[in-house]
Length: 431
Ligand code: FIX
Ligand code: ZN
Image 1 (tube, protein in one colour):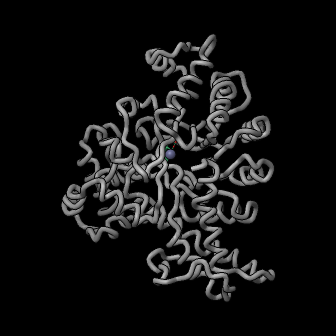
Image 2 (cartoon, rainbow, N blue to C red; image 1 turned 30 degrees about the vertical axis):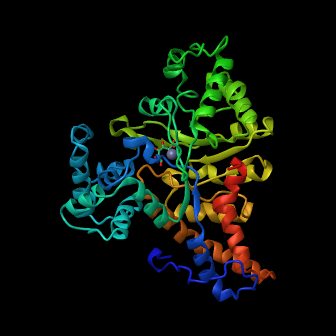
């Protein structure tokens, strides 16, 4: 489906019409409803303007996105060490030259940059980035955020907030002005699988914890979570976990999960988001771009959902091979909500495959996508591509139910899209 021909609703379109739709009008009705549905982007690495430079935006950040850095090192003689010695601007110039001038930007990530430049009527080809740089530099961030959210058809962005993050922690400690379009999440990677490297940070903040999480450590970690719950008002707690993740097992991760994180989530009424399947730093020389994927043993998830029925789990898995299992587990456990086509899966061919399977196995009881945007303007092309990929899949499902003998109306479509892109998440996070 060509995103540019995506049908926008005509003024006065009655999305609540209960009139049965003729089969040949379903595709257009789905496209119009998708365009009109403002999504909740439940997992991003974006920050509200109050976080200052932690929030990335503009052409140099778009070009030095780690997805593009991976592709750059395949199309350039430059070594990672030489690349890291460059300034951000020089890095962006090098990536533009290698991926957009010397080659045609055909990959999902490079096409994304072209789409953003086009949306702002900026040159999408040519030797230099002068016009794009001066354009973005001229944008006041507050109004730019609003404009970008409107272009992306987004209602809310859910951040990823690391209480032990060197820069971010101190911003929260000084008090952060809330932004209506940005929600917080308590990210626990450094506490869970990073405990051996980070337990001292909690100790210096006055929490009586130790290396092996013994003694008062569990109670103190719960106190830490309660303090940050108060400070951040998170909509969920979250952690990404390696493909080797096992539960239960004799480990600090398992201990902290079972004795601290899950009881605290239950007490605070928060879901726990688990993003499973990373092979961290398979190539450390390319830094963030150096992470890989591994197939996980999802019996860990089975044990969590079965043994903690009071807890709710928002789950995304990175390996393509784990997608079907995740769908089947969601049919077994209603405290499990599959979400998103994460990272290396966020490509139309794979999004299509995953989404079709989820509709066939789960109906509309899942969250189709999140952007994982690290740079503000990325939400524009990530949500446009998601809408373009999902429209024909949804339209075909509606045509099939009509063929099977049940009429479909605009009201049905609007209700279902609202559930997929808003209320499944909002109901689970009571936000
Ligand atoms: O763990 C995560 O939240 C991942 O999404 C990130 O670590 C990853 O670098 C990313 O940006 C994926 O899109
Ligand atoms: Zn992420």
